[in-house]
Length: 353
Image 1 (cartoon, rainbow, N blue to C red):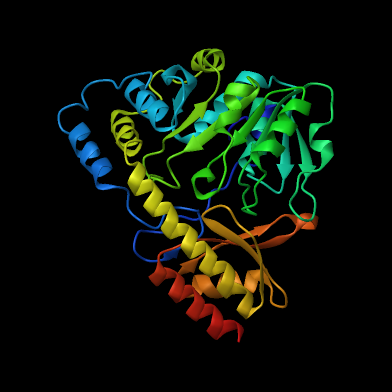
Image 2 (tube, rainbow, N blue to C red):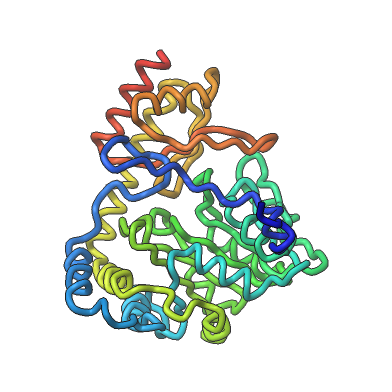
């Protein structure tokens, strides 16, 4: 029997993050993990094929410079030194917690939000300060209150599971009032009307994370990045893995940054789908929170969410059942193609009518 005392106490006490279910390809309609329902742009596929042809025997560029240059141009940033690339934005979040929050120190986050935040604090041996959203998903004033050993605050914007968003001016006010750096997790920002990239140049304590998993349809390559002042990027680079991004993912991400027309068109389709979802679900008894992401958060007035989830799964449709205890429970439904959404509506109407 393994002696559990050999592990750090923080590890043995850890529950671990549980990702959304990933069934075998082709069997299910997957509306549970906020993936893009459409394939990535063709130039990205071409770049992947080219990268795989004759370059895989060499280590990749440890700094992902080609991507950082392309991203700086696409996002109108001063230069590549303002960007740090990572193996998904989850790795970026890991680096941020490791870099700013020591053992026994404190990480702050809103709740309900991305549950990985708490796991990262637990791994670090840090504590987490969870501030409940107001009933209307606005951020209470207590989020910016001073507390001992508070080293970092994480703010998903748009938020998951709600899809709600704070305006740029609201985030700027939060950053000004906090006594620690503020990470704005913008995994879904391309589906929103606003973002906080402009705040990074105005306040060195504002750090923005992004991912290519959602709007670019590249969840399978695991690529994300941080936008921050060059000094922050330089310091965090010390603790990243030597070659944290592989050659194929760098090539794909670099090509994606040059597909602005495809991005705009893809986001327009998904936003149109979101509007349709918000219009149709209330007709069958759901309360839908206005979303700025590629999913909707909904609750049914009369029928248990577990029973709806179980029924849909029995029909090979996956949605995300989420329970936050006293802070609410419901279904988070990712936006699919028109055909997938039609199938969902047909099943729900037949089951709930």
